[in-house]
Image (cartoon, rainbow, N blue to C red):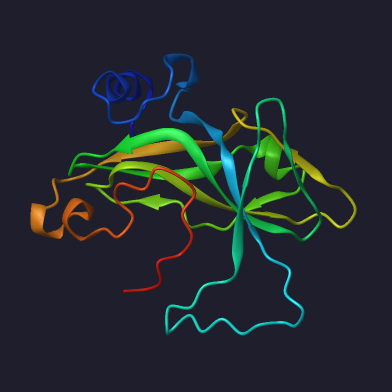
Length: 181
């Protein structure tokens, strides 16, 4: 069941997400961009990344100082993270959705925004790409970058929940791939 306003306020009060109450919408909670992004490194020659063998693309961290921003150039890819920390119980899942006004300006999210019950102590790492041909997109820390929708489900047994099996629990900053398990 999709959760709406009253239940979302309750999730904040219970510490499931540490968002301000003014970020609660009818059926979602707005989340904001942290100050740290990871940028794909330019390499002299195209490199193969063997996903099956858990190889990663080369990336480096960029921290936006207070009052600064990041310029996401056409076709550029980066990882970013939310300021909000999530502590999902074993009966709540959530999913990231890009704000439509950002999508209409060419920002794309790579559809990897599902959060299983039990995911906890973590900020959400986001995968963004500028899909415009001619425009640079400006990203600023603290800007509303998307929204989370929450779903209630039957409780997941502890031994099968993300709390027990998840490889991204406890991440508190932008985190690159840990590969497939």
